[in-house]
Length: 216
Ligand SMILES: O=P(O)(O)OC[C@H]1O[C@H](OP(=O)(O)OP(=O)(O)O)[C@H](O)[C@@H]1O
Ligand SMILES: O=c1cc[nH]c(=O)[nH]1
Ligand SMILES: [Mg+2]
Image (tube, rainbow, N blue to C red):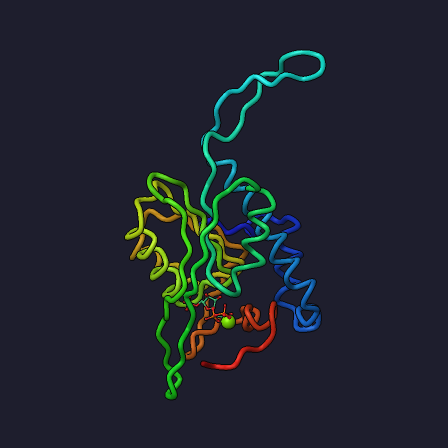
């Protein structure tokens, strides 16, 4: 299942427009905060699909029948560009457990790249709802590698992916490899360059959020 959060106009369209805009995206704090806000909206939308249980709450004046989330999700993010989006999800799912995965593109001299999966910190995943955040879903290879790893570590019951901008090529790859996964994206672009950049996309999300990195 793929949900494009821009299909119905809302504030998220403004924020997607700002993170794409070359003038506005150079304000690093605003770029990170916009990703965070997109994460907050995605958290709210995902929360509408989760399981709730009844609870009686003592107020100063009586007992209020309430509904509360039955279980906490695991919020997983792909370093480093995923951090602001992850923070947005965590702002709303504030009691969640968290996982951090360093899946990044290791570039070869000929311009090709492989996904390197190094550092991983992960809670128990058995029968849990996992929400993976990464602002850019380009070829989908970082995501598929991450999901395969998480499935080896445990047996999550449900996996959601949150991306600010997803490319239809990458979406198809994820759907073919992991048909059960639900993809929530801020917008969908059609084109991918030979180097795996989304067009029109927004550029390099990690660099825009945290600064240019040297290739190791
Ligand atoms: O769908 P894919 O083709 O796998 O590409 C998407 C990945 O590329 C970016 O990370 P990058 O390797 O630039 O690392 P960074 O977060 O350190 O910038 C992005 O944040 C995704 O993780
Ligand atoms: O367009 C892209 C593709 C991958 N990673 C990015 O940051 N941007
Ligand atoms: Mg990057």
